[in-house]
Image (cartoon, rainbow, N blue to C red):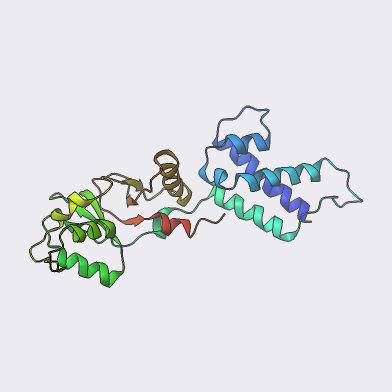
Length: 234
């Protein structure tokens, strides 16, 4: 029956919360959900609390014969199983956002990187120092500010012999990026974006992904808020 399947998955979520976070033995399911630091649980908090209320309706009401009075629909059973999978085995940022990250060195001419941006349809790129580490991030807003500040009286712009480092003074928010490891869940990554908006009231430009989240390591991917918001379901 659906109620049995629902209760089985509910108990798995409850047990997972007990084993993965520090709660008092008397803490209710709703209490665990509200206090949880798990980014997936926090993302689906209201839905999980509703499932807790449904569980109470099933368990604390007498059955009619062998059937529960509150018998969940099949879609509800499917959903709680889906949430259990998200909580216990959340999708990681790799391989979801793994790709070759195109960037430029400070001494590179901007002509080539502008051509790459047009060909690959990307709006920002990391700037690497002489050791190959990320030194900054340049985006289309940076380029637009540089262009507007270098218009000649005739309305033309000369970009010959202009290097990437010449654009760096036009970066609006310096070092507006973070590094995360390949094992970061997509929900943890999403929370980094929303937390910056909440605390600083500004958008984080990008999350750079390396093997263990160190700036000194090779980039294996990157994420923007637009990228990740599209795959985080409400």
